[in-house]
Length: 321
Length: 279
Image (cartoon, rainbow over all chains, first blue to last red; front, side, top):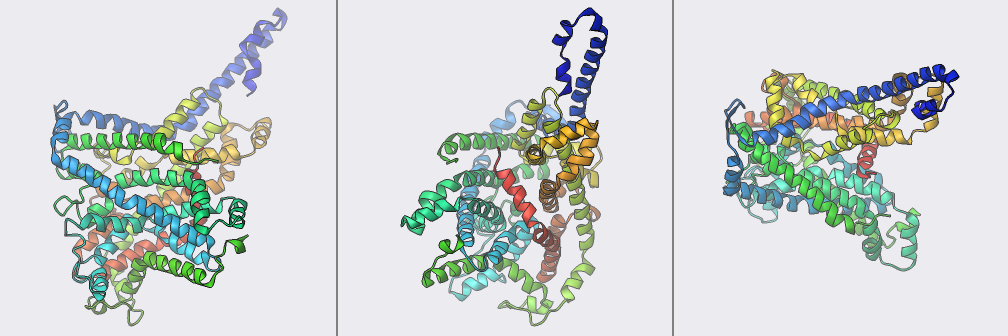
């Protein structure tokens, strides 16, 4: 700010008589700039240190470890070259784990978004009592993966659980929610949609409330039906929020771990073995830090690709005002 | 304005509310089940066909859960962890955001881009080396190990930077004229003014800390260091015989979250929406 007025150039055109005083002011200007420079880094330092120690360095070390064989204590035992990767790409477990992750994403993300949109639209256009409903639909924000998973584990109990009891009342036979390989991923997804339903709702409600009411009203006066107004006007206007939510939800789905670890431990028969669970299993159950790191790098690359694809492909179709 | 958007037709009105009630029952269902279970006696809870409602407000199981399970220890651990992470993250984020907005230093754009790029690194990718680091430092099963890796976040820096950019510039100029240095400006003007954005960040960070699962699972091993989420999950494997004891534990763990949500829904929503509209 101040330092700019004392630039070197102005010092050069000064007469010799004023040179001495000019030099001191150049000096103090430089000092000020240096101080400012230093201060910038002092303010950044706390965050920077944490990022370097717990994000950048581990990122590099993950890449390094993925080319190594390690002993159970995490020390590098031998250079493995690309072995970890070739083994991984040749194993059917890896591909099935990848596919399960994609399936899990497809089962949770679209349903979550549609449900959030439905609840938010209904709450927004409800008159009396909308506050109560808003509170109810926001409640899942307080849930955690630990508490929600335990609750559903009890609900899912095959013989004594409430869900099978209620289904029995309407004549549907007991479902082996968590022990049938064909049902387990669906059960985990159902619980995940419930647990995560607060976030899309809150975000979409805020977005709907921020829409220009005049546009909505004039379209209604024009005689457009509720559904047409919704699909041809509201939805395009909400697309930036939906787009953001899609990105965040897909990333979340790819990083799911807690509910899998508590409800199924990747089973039965590997049917819920999502990517992050397989990282955990390799590194912290089998103590294969090298192959675990290779899996982690795959996760990282996938996340980068996902972000890039979403911004390139979807980004164009999103309506920004 | 609101009147126009009302579905006026009585049939439409009732179907509108019907759908709302149905959806809220789906969301509330498991929570209502939880609420009913915690007031049941062990006998009632284990009946089949299951009872929907307790016959009275029996508090014995809640008391039992508090007595037999180190649940308060878990709650205190999680509280310390979440509070420490919250304070540290708000502080480091405020400092960095201040530097990006008010201090002119070369490379500031580069550092900001680098900070933002850290949001692209999924935490799970760094978890193996981080575990080895914490283990190497002898920080396993300690508060430092639980807290320090989360002492800073790019999201926080981003959120507060957006907020600081909206603060009137004149405040800063006036303070400079008064000879107020960066530290004093930060402590006496910017920090007190970051209330709204700081509150959003604080609620968000606290809830995240309270709900952490994978990292505490890896770095804690003794009962004395277990956090609520891990402790509650362990309980369930040990005490499989009495469900509603486990559910009482779940309820006790959920209480602080619900209280915080009820008090902090507004700042939380503001924080979430601020994160959604990246500039």
